[in-house]
Image (cartoon, rainbow, N blue to C red):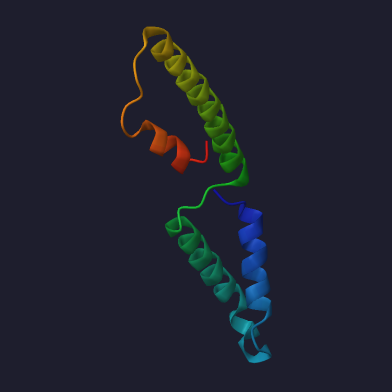
Length: 97
């Protein structure tokens, strides 16, 4: 999920910020920080930017298809003389359409 180099760098920065007296424990603290950060990020269930961008594109394509289908259904209903259902105008107004 996350770049291991980024986690290593963040853990190193955190251990570098320790007081001089604790520098002897720097290696252990760096591993502890890294494991803690990795565990926290995993629990947060985050996605990468690439995964987010892919899903955004999928959603955009899905919305386009839905809008086209809504237009086709409306055209078919108009052609068949089917009146709008009671809540359809309200739903369109609520979505800002």
